[in-house]
Amino acid sequence: MATKTVKAAPAAPRAGGLLPRIWRDRFTYALLAPAFVFTILFAYWPIYGMVLAFKDFSFKAGIFGSPWAKNFGFFWFIKMFNDPGFLHVLGNTVSISFWKIVIGTLSCILFALLLNEVRGTIYKRAIQTVMYLPYFLSWVIMASVIYNLFTSSGGVLNRLLQDLNGGEKIQIISNPKYFRAEVYISMVWKSVGFGSIIYLAAIAGVNAELYEAAIIDGANRMQRAWFITLPSIKSVIVLLLILDAANIMNAGFDQIYNLYSPQVYDVGDILDTFIYRRGVTNGEFSFTTAVGLFKNVVSFGLLLLVNFIAKRLGEEGVL
Amino acid sequence: MSKRSIGDWVFDSFNYLLLGVAGLVTLFPFWNVIMTSLVGSTEYYSKAVVLWPSAPNLTAYLYIFSTNWIATGFRTTFLITVLGTLFDLALVCTAAYAMTKKDLAGYKFFNYFFLLTMYFSGGLIPYYLIVTQYLKLTDTLASMIITGSLSVWSYLVLRNFLKEIPAELPESAKIDGANELTILLRIMLPLSLPSIATLALFAAVGHWNEWGRALYFINSQDKLPLQMILRKIVLDPNAARGMRGSMDKAYQQLVGGTNETLFEEAVKAATVVVATLPIMLVYPFIQKYFVKGVLVGSVKG
Image (tube, rainbow over all chains, first blue to last red; front, side):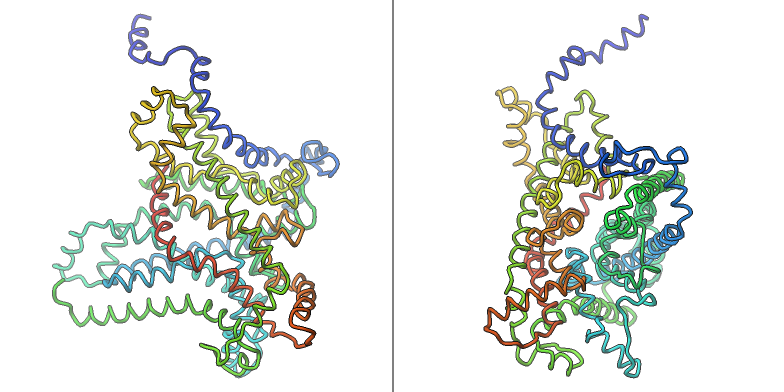
């Protein structure tokens, strides 16, 4: 007992009990209140609203008053895993996300490496300014510009491709054959510039002495990039890959929704567009809430998993 | 590095060329849209590519402005950009300042309370039902302004910045009798103005590009933001058909009964240009703040 009091004594400056402290900080709580209230309303209330996945939605009773679903509430989950549409869309989502991560990461790193070799500041700035631009435009605008290029009623690139094809008609937009390519290329177009910023910053932080030593050893630029730059920015690459991997269930609603059409649902429909169509448009609220719950739980699990793996590999995690 | 070998020279030339081509490829689609909006169908189809129209004309622009849809779109977009940004910043500034006080009872709880929303959400459908059924915000501008929670990323950036401000400043103000709100508005925010400006730009571009919440919540044509008007005219054939009918009528009234059919691709392209131009104009000035923002934000919270 004696040691306890001795230990407690130096940490005493906290005046009073809990209530006086709360009263002392009442204005601080008042400042915290707006963010707290809106986070409850639009983040935690919807999280609680996911109980709908275990209920049969009725418009009259609302989310919270609707009766529980059959099979101990798991009716919609059973339906989900027996729904060929859902399984197909899940596959699309993972595959589109996976290739977006691979292509996106490689293109950003390559662009950063090439840009880093440019010595003229003005040229470098000009290229950066141009390449960052699409990042600031919405996917509505990007998809509209793509439409302008490829529309089968005379898009410039559509006509060019037709000429190359010996004058035969070609349909690019709404064609399942080209849709995935359209998604990947437009993703690179929109984000390669802005996505490279973080790699450029990492490259700028590499110890210059390493390069000097390599030059003395006769390493050419490719060798320097491969043996010095890339290993030096490894932890940044890993960190960004972790964040991407945890996001694999999000294949990009904004992009897909603005590019796709019923003709390409087979290759282009992803979980988020599926949820929107079957939920908001068709009103299958319980079913799509179950899909959403599945998606969010898997995402969260993936985040914990990749964070754990990253820490095991000796990298800094994100949590 | 003094002497450049032939290999270096070859590499540099190739690299400059490659990046130059990448830049042109990135820009060309936008240039092509502008040109498409300025030409007639005859010239458009007779040339492989229109780098500059022989006789630029603005009929497509006259046509799309013949109804007030573009104007109401601009108005909505402007309102949700200004009010939405102010709303976001109000939440971020107050929360970030409050959370600089580590001895606050419940500090850890509040911190995790906000952080968790970055990693877990209720998903679209519960959110949609709460906004439409419980809060009854369907078809209101508010549904595109206040239906967000705290932006955790901005909150972390600003909180980390505010923590760097010496504690003596707010302390002495408190002794002089200033309350927390005064300290925040008179001392902390003016000192962190550059950070706040960057966060405001991020928020503003996000709101300017808003279309998702309009898709979910807005039914009336005159409340749709510009992005949705663009979406309907260019990307949604069903909606476009209806809109084009009214636009045809309005245009014929405007120019006086001529029954000429307008070149459809020019009309669509003109809409794209009008929706893109504002961002293009401010972009060169705000670009550097975004680069800064990305690098600041990448520091772990």
